[in-house]
Length: 110
Image (cartoon, rainbow, N blue to C red; front, side, top):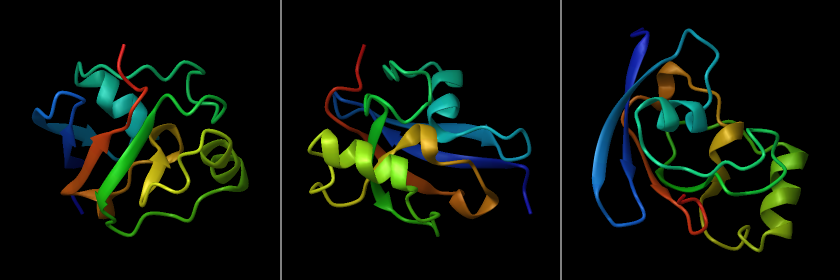
């Protein structure tokens, strides 16, 4: 499988970006978004404690189940009721995510 995947990201202004991200470096989606010079707050730095890296996943691409910490944070931030909400810091990049589409969630902009 390819060690670099493409992810389609829609920013808060509705602009679409195709980013490239390696799957062999242990990166999560939040880190990939930042590495491609897109603005995402991620105030807690990837600890699943703030929900400012929230994304809406447009197509799933076999995402892992949510951890209890991620589910609790989305629930506390009132985002769990938004279909397909995830914390980008909790989505470790895998080859199966190639072509995934996400939209940055409210509160993620800097």
